[in-house]
Image (tube, rainbow, N blue to C red; front, side, top):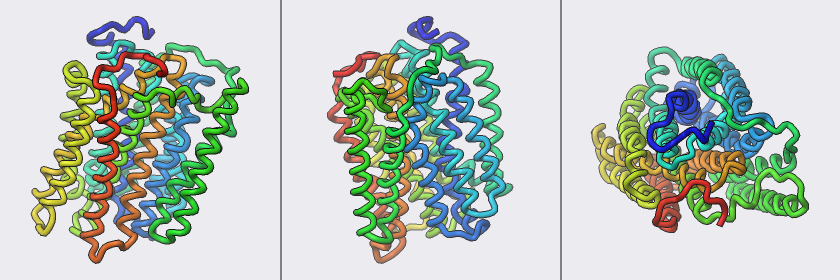
Length: 470
């Protein structure tokens, strides 16, 4: 039970529970980035285009973002462990279907749809259970540090692992590997994970709210993807998305006032610290996925590197991210979350600038490494404190909702990052392909400045667990 956790190292049973949690976050993040180095192989094998593969990647990220809030809400009704298991099974089926896909349509069904749905079901329970089981701030930071580190490593190492598998076997083998890891997580979670709270089968579910939130997010990201084809279509889709999301929030407020069950409690948005933390989360994952997509595509399309070579270069980011993520506990003890997040954004933006300056006009591989290391260090340092700020701002009664919202915001960031970078690359805004990739990195850096401003507005002190709304 959660109340058994004291300051210091958690009991061995809880340390074991972190293993499937961390593996689950790893595989979901890995799935979002490993396809970046398979762009050429998949497009040739399935007789599609680079843009077609980008659409598949973006749909996967979008499905996760759109369904994460409903997925978090369902944990209260059906139980966190049941939702975790259901999500793992759906994900595994999607991975196997992707492995045998004869064309882009089946790949989108397996990878983008089923794996996206599975992720939306399994990730909220991971963060909810972690928050419920680790009540002391330092032990919770350690737990989130391990999970966030594996998530970041999955996203950063996806190109390397995917590259080796693609070159040694086939891009299809990557999906087989995902299915095998999912099977391992199912076995470990059944043995080591216990739900500290009973499910409430009588709790109603807001289907209308789920439809509105998913539709709004779908329209917004589709609008970003349409920017390279038709600016009027882009404007129309973005406006429609904004209207639907406004309708969603108005309906949530109306349902709460009338005493009906709402998909998302408006109390979640009354906490200024949590709101700012959500902004930083969104921008962090936007930067991680935007940089990963842009650099991977540049290395393959412009420099002509194969999947393994591209993945090896990305090892620099993975190493930096691993070092700073694993230092999360030390950072939590010595520095306020605001300090770490601000430093993370500064280092990440400095990494992008370094990348642009050093890579320009040279063909030397080593020029990629310093900037990528800085990017990894910066992102890895701030992933954990941002999650901890948001989750710790609310009590146990709102953990299902805030976890779904938090993961939705993060995955929406990944989706927007891939869509934004991809749109800049294919829009033909510059005179040469090289300048298009540089422009995409500049756009990602500009987004980082927004995250930096939000981080600077965070409170300077430490955030006590379960502070509630303010």
